[in-house]
Every structure is written in C-alpha cells, then in structure tokens.
Image (tube, rainbow, N blue to C red; front, side, top):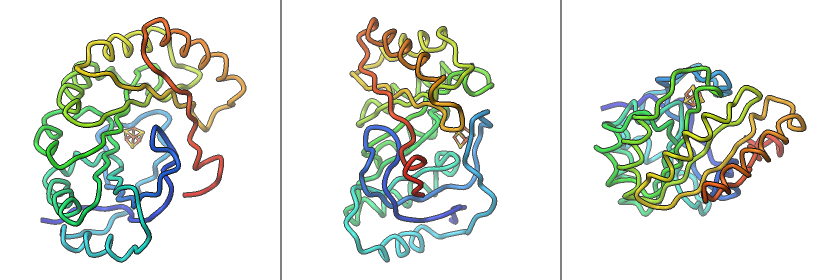
Amino acid sequence: MKGRIAEVFDSVQGEGLYLGEKQLFVRFYGCNLQCKFCDTKLLSFLEYEPEELLAELKLYHDRYHSVSFTGGEPLLQKNFLKEIASLTRKNGFINYLETNGTLPDELEEIIDYLDIIAMDLKLPSSTGLAGYWSEHRKFLDIASQKEVFLKAVVTQSTQEADIKDALKLIKGMKKLTVLILQPDSSQNQATLKEKLMHFKELCLNYNVTTCIIPQVHKIARIK
Ligand code: SF4
C-alpha cells in the first residue's frame, strides 16, 4: 500500500498548544475541503510504502517531540496513516495528528495509534463552506480518548454565532479542552484584534479556556 505524501521535513511547530516544539512533519497530499483562507499549496506528491517513509524519518538524527501528520487531510489516506503511525509508534515516536475534524469514521479506525490530536473547528463564516457541526461532534467523541485541543481560524468574516456554536460543542465534550483562536495570517492583524478580544471574552463567559495564538512560523519566516 502506498501513501501520497507532498513533503517530509523537520521544523518547529508554529501553531497551537505545542508551539515551539521540534517535530518531523509528514504532509499528506489531498484535502476534502476548500477553506477560503487555505494557505497550503499541495501541487505534487511522492508515493511511499510505509516502511520507506519510516526509513526517511529515521534519517533525521535530531531529537524531536513528535511526528506531525499534517496535510491536506491525513485521514483521507487512513489505511496508509494507520500503517505509518503503527511503525512510528513501534520506533518510539509520539504521533501527532493535525486534522480538519470532518472524518470521524476514519478517525475511529486509527485512534489507537495516535497520541495528540490538533483539530480544526471549521467555522462556516471563516471557511466560506457549510458547517460540519455533526461531524465535529462525532469526531470529538472519539478524539476525547486521547489528548485533543481545538483551533479555529478567525478572519474578518467570522461571525459571533459560529463562535457560540463552537463553544456549545466544546461544553458538550466528554473532557475539558482548550480552544485556540488563530488569526488569519493573511489579513491585517490590527483590525482582527478587536474581534479576537471580543471572542475571547465570549469564551470566558462559557468557561472555556481560550488562547489567541497566531501562526508563529509565518511571523518568524520559518517553514
Ligand atoms: S482543511 Fe486545511 S488543508 Fe484543507 S482546505 Fe481547509 S485549511 Fe486547507
């Protein structure tokens, strides 16, 4: 079985709760969504057998916090992801999944091989797409077996009603989690600030722990 991989590289995590941790990144090719703010260009891929990908990861000799399976959407290639995550775990790596949280059935099949799940909440007013609330709910039910935190991209078009729906979803989760509000890095940060502060206040009213964390790798200009 071969996986379609857009790139393999080492760097520092630039988003979310593990900001600043050194990771090996495996970027899966292909996504099931087309978010308005997407900045991930997936133009080509190489095909790997799971063992070939593991061998490439083992060429990196530094010490890493974890392997980040990112995309695109890694769960679109769930069979390959299961194989490689099983191999990385056997070789002592922590498995970290970055996902759009819309494929719960696929997550269920591989949850045993994951350690940390960084899930995007796809707010319709940010993405320009339909809402994925029922998929997100089912996804989080499964993801709650492991460490999980949430990220929501905030743009000029993000509506308060979507943040409230997200907070209701979080309050219904089996365990406490943190919501990262991530300003869209392509937009003017000064004009987003007021909106972010308002949403943070809203989160406090719902007793949901929230951090405003920008995409630091873009500010620092590292990959
Ligand atoms: S889910 Fe992620 S990779 Fe896919 S379109 Fe949205 S932002 Fe881009």
